[in-house]
Length: 275
Image 1 (spheres, one colour):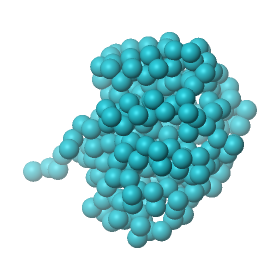
Image 2 (cartoon, rainbow, N blue to C red; image 1 turned 90 degrees about the horizontal axis):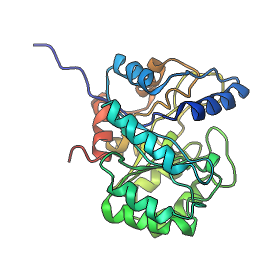
Image 3 (tube, rainbow, N blue to C red; image 1 turned 180 degrees about the horizontal axis):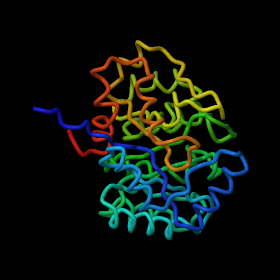
Image 4 (cartoon, rainbow, N blue to C red; image 1 turned 180 degrees about the vertical axis):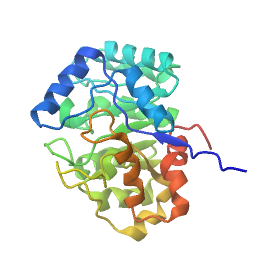
């Protein structure tokens, strides 16, 4: 009897409306990244062809006034393509921030929040986000943070910025992208005291000449938290094939028995789809 194929869940995939995607791709063209220009339907097909059964859809409101329309697009993409569980985005300068938060958490089509301070230009511990965090903590509503300094940094990124959120809202269900790079050990250590905290592998241990993606941290400590490390690809905004993201998982210093969780099971728990 043949073994069933492993469950593969990608916790870090980007979706944008066509015009916003074009702007994102032009930005990466300036870096000569050569990213993959795919629409939502094409992204769904690419992931399915690699055995992915479920993925997030991530975006970010880069300025005030765009979050509502962006979140509407995300919800519709999730309804059109069952593979997506779309996350929402907000901007702290929106006057109706609190009402947006309520609508998102109550929506049957949006399943978390995504924050990208590198682009959005505000601090994760901005007091205007306090109500969002309090509601997420109460509802056990997931948040995915780009909080580390890889591959580039600004004044809004780094473990110290992120720590101020954890101190005030220690029960948040959250995931930090890119394994918290380049502050790998600081984010890994935070897992010790925060059982609802996860890390994703996005762009770490992939083979590319663009920047150093090597995970550098304490292997024993990583193994202790193998059940909270989740696969992420950053597709389609990467300059290498999708298979390279999958292949990167075997380069982490983890035992073979941890791979099924890394590949899908851990993300299902983060998304509250299994106990």
